[in-house]
Image 1 (cartoon, rainbow, N blue to C red):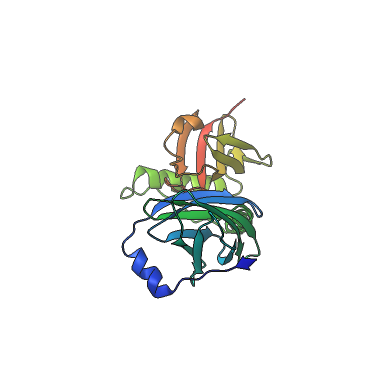
Image 2 (image 1 turned 90 degrees about the vertical axis):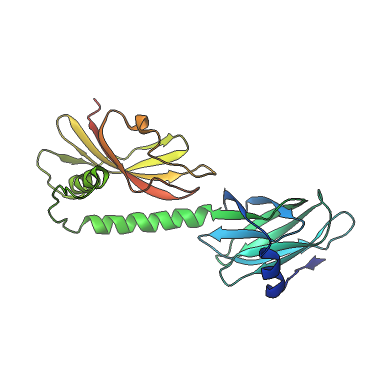
Length: 255
């Protein structure tokens, strides 16, 4: 027998007021499994990035199975609360999303503060990245205005501007655009070359970068990975799990 449990918004807000979230991020494909701990005292939040929750369905609680209430807010976030149960008890169910995806959910009741779980849809993330890449190609066709060194800006901002100009302006004197694409893994980052220019002894490369770790990472933390660079710039120094960005690299040509 299948049951869906709901909790009122007023009760949910009352419970949330006394809790503090710790966050765990996970990248899950359609049909994949989500494992989470549910606080015995406070609501536990499931937030779906690139998607939204539709409903969470559990088996009828019986014996040692806890009874869990689930509600979905207007943003598509799912809140879980223990109606009846004890630490260590487990229950399974299915979470369906607004995007038509289904995840197997395994929940364990714990005597702990409330947690927040961010579920990153692997397929939706890839679709968003593809759309972003297509938009970047269109942007690259727009003529870039003349860039000059700005004494009032930081070295990072100036170098980033100059490197963008170098990589996006066709027919840059002394540089030839290459068609090749390369993909490599660097400390949990997937780096794919978006555009490459070469001269007799230099390379200018734009990398699309994605954080495949299940935790936050600063792509600029280990610049040794980009040697032998002359200059390197990053669109962000904070990539969450599953998040994307770009690296602009000017380095000595590899022979």
